[in-house]
Amino acid sequence: MHPTVRLCLYDHCWHGIDGLTIHDIPRLNVSKTAQLQTAGALYLADIAPTFPLTATQRHFVNFIVQQEVAIDRAAIQAELARLEYPLFFFDFETIDEPVPRFAGCRPYQQVPFQYSCHVLEENGRLTHHDFLHTSHDDPRPALVEALLRHIGDHGHIVAYYAPFERGVLRDLAAAFPHHAHQLLGMADRLWDQLDMFQKHYRHHRFGKSNSLKSVLPVVTDLRYDDLDVRNGTQAQVAWQQAITTTDPHEKARLTQNLRQYCHLDTLAMVEIHAHLRRL
Image (cartoon, rainbow, N blue to C red):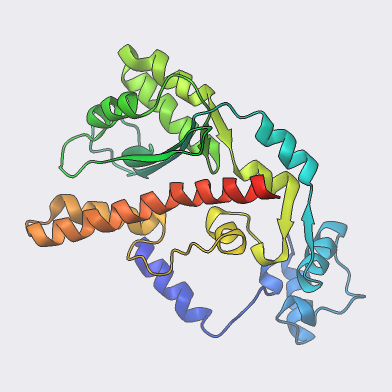
């Protein structure tokens, strides 16, 4: 099923549902789901306190229903103190195809066609660099050359779920061995901002996820709502359209949408970093 169709069906089936439901409870088996449905429970607040859940499931339900917040400020401060400036807030956009179109790629390999990078100096100066490939040929050679220009040889590279960026960088190092030293060095300098929200910062408004898009509206004023491209799946679709369209105005519109989306991904990390420092 095409990703866009899947998203449309989800929006249709869950229309009018506002808030977390019993289907969001981690590892809730089919039998207990059926019991809750028979009892008329839909939202987490509908679940009786005596209903048998595991300790993890009950903690999840209570945390959301009781609107709890848990922040370990000392641990966050210690983690931030480890960071070496300048900080490179970084995000790839990739395409993963079952039948690779570029030589040397394997099925479903994450092939980067775009990135955004906000650079924060220790004195607070912020600059931005980006790359977006807009033609049919392999985006990786030009992307690697841009990476080497935009990312210096010292300072932490901040990503949100760093294993993804690390995997892309290691694939690039394998594909371009003459740049492997620099690319593997970048992979080793990655620092995962997601760790803060997995280990030290929980908020009931994050819901069942601590993804960037769940955390961002809780801790900053930034939103994805007004963008035409609002997630990675839409970015893949927009890029495919951008490199195939023959209409220059449509191509310009699509590339602008892609740049705005990827720019917001890394600006979001900058704003989250500022919020964490203020705690």
